[in-house]
Amino acid sequence: MKRSHKTRGVVRALTVAAVLSLAVLPSKATTIGLVLPDHPDFYAIDIGVNYTASTTKFEAIGTTDTYIDLSNTPNWIGDLPASYNLTAYITSAGELTNGTVTIQGDTDYDEIAETLLTGNLTTGFEGSAFGATSTGDAVFEFLFTVTGGSYANDFGGIGASGGIVLSPDGGSTFTDTWTSDFTNGGHGYVDNAPVPEPSSLLLLVLGAAMCVATHRRHKHARVP
Image (cartoon, rainbow, N blue to C red; front, side):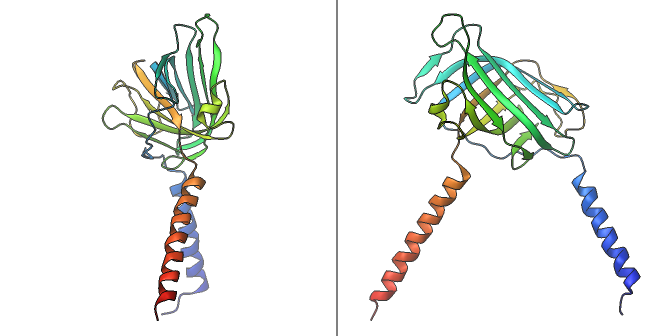
């Protein structure tokens, strides 16, 4: 039985409406499985996490504690001033629209803070640009692009990619959605380390594939 033009139009309209409704549904948190190298790594403690749904503002503020350098040697950053500040704007649909990270500390113990590392957070939807879950002690994952700081070169230089894994340390009231406020007990901790560029990983995979293909062509060419 043939559908009328009117029926087909209604079906198309309902399909479009369904897709649009899915786009604005509150997001369920999803991790991105971010695994960071042991070094270099900035480790910060006493992280207080706060999210305000009405402003979409997520904040993680604490104290920069240790730097694990390129030779895998821990270096104590020093007492105050040594601040850690991550700010992100995340909508109820789970889209990170803007964000930065700034790591400061006193590496020469002169009680004057210097900016050690800064970065812009990767924007986009959870599950790809960033991740989060309330399972266990909870975790928040972010990607960023290095924009400055005295240790920027250790992280690959300006424009290189970094990753952040933040644990609220069991005190989080996060419930896997971005529709309501949440906080933690102020005792979270966070690691900040370089991550491979996705394009670099792709090039490695493509290079390996080309080597295999070339080897097979040469093998078949030698067969009489």
